[in-house]
Amino acid sequence: MIVFGIQSEKGGFTLVITTATTTTQIATIRNAELKDASKIQEIYMPYILETVFNLDTIVPSIETLENRITQVTENYPFLVAEADNEVIGFVYVNHFYDYGFNNACMLSIYVSDKTSIRGVGKLMYDHMEALLISSGLRYIISSIIETNIKSLKFHKKQNFEEFVRLPNIASKHDQFQSIVWMAKNIAPALEYIYLT
Image 1: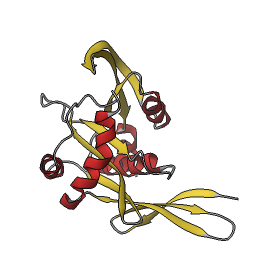
Image 2: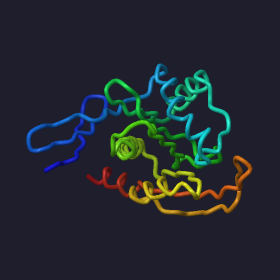
Image 3: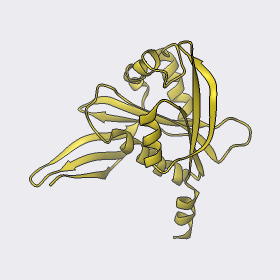
Image 4: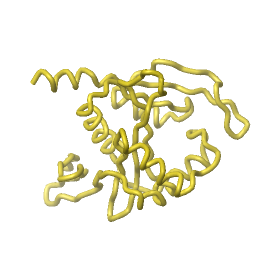
């Protein structure tokens, strides 16, 4: 029998797999540090150069990613997943525009295409959601390219709901791309915390 679980540790969570005879640590979630920028760039690169799932066309420099980590962490969490001392994924949130949407944030989540470890995206997301609930935010929003079926399914499994579809609003590699905005209302969890 195999059981997947999440084990809390000081400063993060660890995905563990338990069998009848052994427990194996799979990945640890921790706060991103500036030294992680090169691994984040490596994870990001194929999404930018080889897919239309990220609309960027130029891979951000390590300096740009260091600045992003610094800027994001002034207000929000920026987390990485690590296995065998190697960063294999990252997740962060940022402002959902700057026009009074103080109760919402925009999610970005990426897992290395080189890892064979399953469940890393969910582990990162669960940790991020817990942090956002405790911070008082009410909505998590994700912008997804319509053809990124894997991402759409992932968000649906995390109870995100589509709230707008923007047909052919963007383009990359000379192809029009439709964008789906999905959102999750985490306010009920926040209200539960306040009531207990």
